[in-house]
Amino acid sequence: MTMISETKRPRRGKIDGTFDTAIGWQSGTAQSFLARALPAALILFVFAGPIMTIIAGAFDLNPDPTRLTLWPTNPSLANFEVATNRGIWGYFFNSLLIAGLGLVLQIVVAVTAGYALARRKFVGQTVVLGIFLATMMLPEEVVAVPLAVVLGDLPLVGVNLRGTIFAIILPVAASAFSILVMAAFMRDIPEEIIEAAKIDGASEMRILVQIILPMCTPALGVVAIFGFNGIWDQYLLPIIAANRTADYTITVVLSSLRADVQVGQGVLLAGAFLALVPSLIVYLLLQNSLIRGITSGAVKG
Image 1: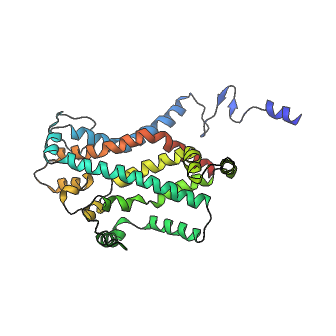
Image 2: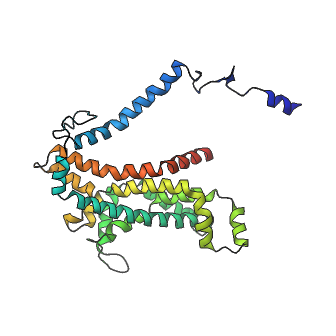
Image 3: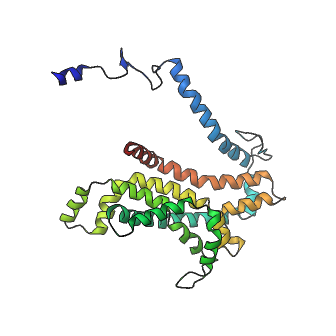
C-alpha cells in the first residue's frame, strides 16, 4: 500500500501540468524568460564581446581596438597581407607543431601515470600525489630559471636541448592537472570489470587501451582542451628554449608585433585572430566531452 501511495504522489514542483523553475517561477512565463535571457545576454556580452572585437578588427582596414566593435567598418584583408609579409604563418606553424606533438605526449603521460596512480598501490604514492599538487601551485616565472639550466645541460646525459623542438615539448609532456584528472576518472571504474578482463586473459596494456580508455573519453576531452590551450599559450618557455627568433611561437611574436611601431593595430589583431582559431576549433570539436567530464565530476561530488 505504501508503494502504491508513493507512485500516485505528484512529483515535486508539478502543479496542474506545469513545472516550477529553480527560482520558483513557472516555465513559459515572461518572468522565466527574462530570468534566463538577461543573464545569458550578459555572459555572452562579457565573453563574446572581446572575441568579436578581435575578429572585426582583423578584417577592418582602420580598426580601433579601444572601442567595442562587432563588425568591420572598412572590410579588408590588408592586415593579413602585412602579417603574412612579417612571416606570421611560419610562427603559426611552429605553434601548431609544438602544440600537436606536446598534446600527444601529454595525453600518453597522463593516461599511463593516471592508471598507475588509480589502479596500482606502491610505496610513496601519497608523496607522489603531493608533489603533483605542489607543482600546480608554482607559477611559470618561478621555474623559468631552473628550467633554462636543465634545458642547457640535461642531467645524466649532458645534452643541450636549446634550439630544438624537444626543449619546448618535453617540459609540457608532463602535466599534473592532466594526470590527476585521468587518475580521478580511472579510480571510479569498477574493479570487477578489470578482474573479469584478467580472467579472460587480457594483458595489462589491452585492459588499459580497450577497456579503461573507452570509459574515460570525457576525461580525455578535458585533458585535450586544457592541455592544448596550455601548450598553445606558452610564452616564457619558447623564449627560453629558442636560439633564433625564427623558432618563436605565434604568442611570442604577437608581443614583438605590439612593440613594432611600423605595424598597425590591425596587423596585431589579425595575428591575434590567427592565434585564436586553433583553440576555438579544439573547443568546438571536444565541447561535448568537456561537458560530460564536468557533469560527471559534479555528480561524483
